[in-house]
Image 1 (cartoon, rainbow over the protein chains, first blue to last red):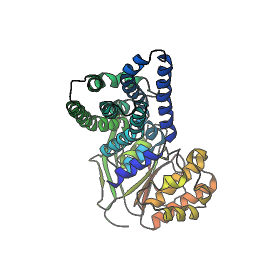
Image 2: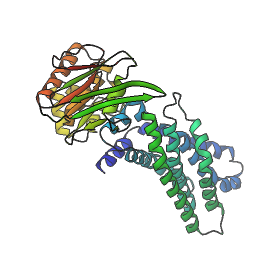
Image 3: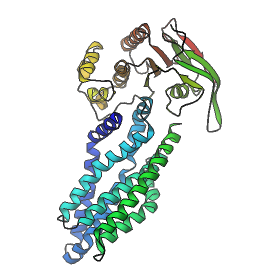
Image 4: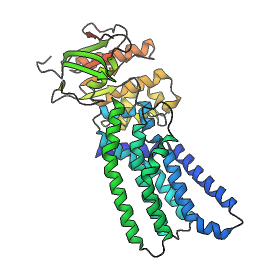
Length: 211
Length: 192
């Protein structure tokens, strides 16, 4: 437990600059879309939740390349494993810190932009990015031994398996007849599936990379 | 020296990508031993050291005693570039701020305490990585080419540190391309 907390603390307070870059990219894209649709405020209002969800998903998937790569390149991953940390704990700590430091600010920003008017939107951003981070961890671990940076390869790998989550989240936002609870239950179920799958596959992929 | 080895390697063979890196390696490491793995590039020195550190996977051919504890410094130093020297050393689970301060002072590195790793030279980074060994209180040190990037004075300081560790009942396994200044070191040569 101590090792998990220590790893999470290390990750939370390192690479703050990178988190700021991702948030700036997200905000720039939202502003760009806002300027483009300034002549049609009704369209902007209707389109905004979908845009925010899609962009959150997009910037999160672009950031996943960095999940294990820094530790891999500076030798921290090897060092951690030699210190007796299990790969499962390491993977879980990395995923949770990545999600906490990127997705929570994103959800906050989405909330501010949308005026905290849509609870399903906030839940959608938080859970879809959680699922994406867990699923993306598998791809990120698999791509570690690829010499070139894989920022654009990873979204291609993770997007197909993340599509059900996007569909459910979009449904929660746009379907006024559905109860919020049913969508939250669906999103929770998908999140649990992603966690279970990732906690088996990502440590195994890292083990292969470390060989 | 005790009769129970800290580490017992028996008939250890390792293959990667269909190629056998080394075959039937056997040795034992006792308290007070220094083992140096030597050999040409690509002979598997680093891989063997990583196997001893259980980094790729735990092998049945490598047995460790119940009291075995290890500290590993690989070819990459395992230091976070965006953190200061002190913050990096505090990542070691046994480290406390007081202990870190004491060790840095003892090694004459206290001036680097608040410097970011990214601002240090390769030799200074290596010194900090080696300082971690002293913080760990581990019985066995596993070090990949310890004196890479070090100047003569820093290398000498490392050998003194290792000698003190051995005298204190510790043991070490190192990889090296050159002869190490350790008369009691056992050399295992790997062939390509």
